[in-house]
Image 1 (cartoon, one colour):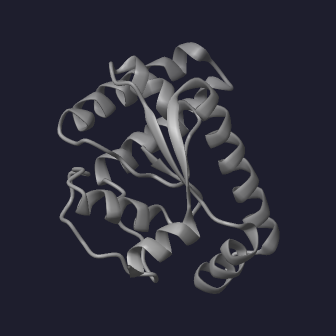
Image 2 (tube, one colour; image 1 turned 180 degrees about the horizontal axis):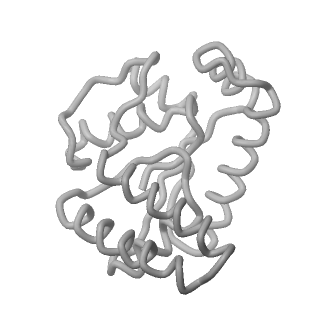
Length: 166
């Protein structure tokens, strides 16, 4: 699972993995610094179910349970047809749901220094500094905690750029 905040190199990492033969279940596309890609539409729908589960679980576990079960089933179906997935706004629950679906999560975290990440995100997406800061801290905290539970690697964005240009 390729993870990291938006504008942190997750698309570049997924593109390089695709060039090495890893199947994301999508058409292979060259990396473009101005766009994102490799978020599978089925995974986006699973993420929507996870968000519904999270909201409903605050009211009732019983109301929320069908959304979690549906997310696990949908995730299992998706993972049967791909070798890797990418979704930058990682849900801390996604690896646990992958585990429940019978798959052992392995994380590939694209790490980018905060300053260039924030500048890129503010320019490209028009988000505020505070949003950049909150997203950056939350996503990397979650990803690094998940590395303590599951296998994975952290890949430096600048090293990816240098590799791409060589």
